[in-house]
Length: 451
Ligand code: NDP
Image (cartoon, rainbow, N blue to C red; front, side, top):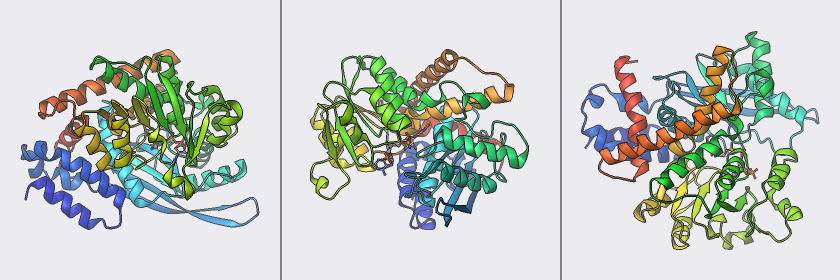
């Protein structure tokens, strides 16, 4: 049995009941197999065995008091996966579905993603099964402070620098930053995605969505296409989806559908982003409220039992699909529907939104498919730019950061396209991203010895 296959089988067996981690492992190790097995130095150095095992996993209790005076307890996680090329870096997610499996899959992906940015950042991820929906500001603050009371022992500007993710935006980062500073008595860039008054970077908020569209625009350009006049469906209506929508619109594309976990809206005239931002960023409301602003739009419920037959957002015919909500939100049947409807490009704004089977459908049908670890790397790349600004005690203009982000995304496209060609599978950007991300980390691990 090949080295890669053996490590994959052992790792799956050693980590039972972690389906999302298994999925990420399977995708990455399977695509790396020909490359790794052709280069025996990786086996000699035990690179894969070390890569699949997190350097450190921190599990902790988060007690807090709700507005009714009742004690609540949530689970806290931080997986410090790999620091071969820099301090651990990756977001914190607050969502009831958060588990060790989800945090490990995200942390594992993050190693390769961060490597692809070309910046000195290792891979990590964390979060809690806390559900921020419906909580008061005071409850959010109490929770964030309690989380940071424990997490502050394990992180630092040169050790581990968390950021936001699902359910964690500027408000939560602010509360966590304040508590870190209070406990450690250090004003340092320990979190990214901070407010602009205390060390945040311009364009960080926009970076993941913009970066996704920059990478897709470059991919389309190299294939004689563009966003101009194309219909685009985007799932989610959070941070990534909103700024992907904005950039698509700026490039002349027409975003016709957005969603949240309850349902999706279809607006044939093109979505009114100001309305969406007011609903989501100001009122923290539901996407169904969009009909109050645009009565001609159509809302389809997807969460309820009877809605299971109406299909997902991916039944909306579009030329370009950008899944920007969560993992495993786009299944094999959705992929087939998209292909049958003439969709020619898919970019993963979320982490692992397409199942393995859906990805296979896209690759088989020669759809231009950008995997998340390349397509959504603009967020973490700009977080690394925020770290640089914090260390140097300077602040760049929006235009400076945005230009650096564009350059990074174009470079990522070039490196994944080149790696795919070198591996003999041109335009398979899944293979390209995994090999390009792996090489740098593996080399650093070998140079640093068996640690
Ligand atoms: P937000 O919390 O801002 O938004 C998440 C969106 O996805 C919401 O519209 C939410 O709907 C929807 N969603 C979340 N969970 C589910 C679910 N189980 N089923 C259906 N819809 C769901 O998060 P972000 O926009 O920051 O993150 C979105 C994705 O992008 C995640 O996969 C994240 O890991 C990834 N990502 C984010 C980066 C960032 O910088 N923020 C960087 C790189 C990747 P609802 O409000 O109803 O829950």
